[in-house]
Image (cartoon, rainbow, N blue to C red):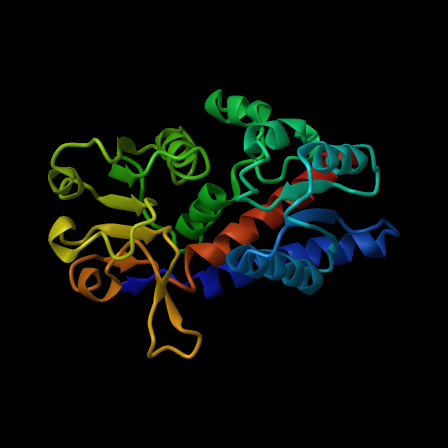
Amino acid sequence: MLILDGKVASQSVKENLTEATRQLKEQGKRPPHLAAILIGNNGASETYVASKVKFCAEIGFTSTLIRLDDTTEEKELLAKIEELNTDDRVDGILVQLPLPKHISEANIINSIDPDKDVDGFHPVSVGRLVQGLDTFIPATPYGIMLMLEHFQLTTKGKHAVVIGRSNIVGRPMSILLSSNIPFGNCTVTICHSHTPDLRQMTLQADIIIAALGKPEFVKADMVKPGAIVIDVGITRVDDATATRGYRIKGDVDFKAVSSVASAVSPVPGGVGLMTIAGLMKNTLSAYERRNQ
């Protein structure tokens, strides 16, 4: 059984991005610049943003972290985004989700300049993805595609089942896997909370992408022998025996599924690291497009 180690795959991406940044600096050019906005002090969001800032530093990118109080009004956040939109020194903008309930995620996403939309959530980016045009791919699906590429997993002609239909993972993942691109060309089924007999669907899958946010939901008896299982879930589960008082669980029962599948991604140490790698590749692409 192959462990789809995100540390190994992301390191390969990191080395390529580091070399690209080195070449830019040798040519007397500035490095790519990612600006992140973090609102409030959500623990998970703090962790995610810190990882992104650290990755930027390791590959030589410039990063700016803008912290705003969770009482920040929507109009204030929109004004900050517009400031970044018009700043020629900033190539990529991300607003860490989730946002406080009084702020509309749709309004915020739509306000980001599509040319700086490195999260790939803007309707322009999504529309281009659906049409098979060059665009920013949402970071998590992009990271999964990079993982498939790194481990040279065969996808052509396979049946992929995506559990979850979010705009962040499930829907774009289904588009990518079904597209006529390297590591695509799958027949794709999207499953969700209203899918009858989900187990029957997953047992037909050569590839399972689990992105539903329910800890250890995918059990061994739901997986066809030899299937590839990619776990997108990340949930904090209370555990008094753990040092931090909780453990991070994925959507897949990793230990049990490992006895059946041919390849499984772990949580932590899997897709999460690849998401950041995908984000950074988008940031480099944004820089290159803006400076051509």
